[in-house]
Figure (cartoon, rainbow, N blue to C red):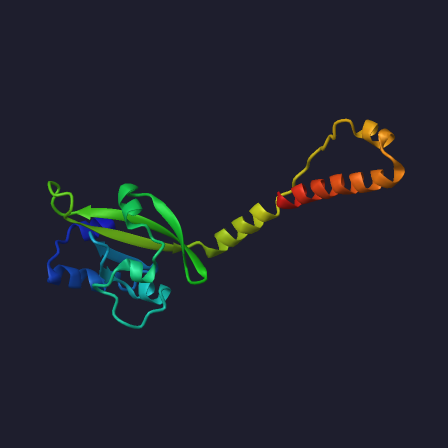
Length: 170
């Protein structure tokens, strides 16, 4: 896809040709200009944003404020995970330079891959990890022997509460 888009210039008739080829692409795609304005998108992208109005010439930040445009430019070929509505998407980016001498003459192509199920499983895994610990309390026996009966129950209850609180925070 990127190699195909690289063959085109910013001429309107070239973009119209690419429109017809990529409108049915199964992944959401958006092409952005340098300032972050949407130059082109497919129907999947529009559906992902749950928009009915025209998106062209609008800033990507209007729809996805958490998308760090400058970060995508710096890590070209990398990816970031963002949340759009109730879904998570891995966003892959690729800069297409039309004039190799001018660093600000390019388009940024964004591909969105739905990774919602993966993120849910990952979140569950992270929150349900088994943790084993051996807790040694220094001078426990001495404390037990040298504490009055009425006071020892309170001391040991506070120690137990501290351990439970620590374990809960894990």
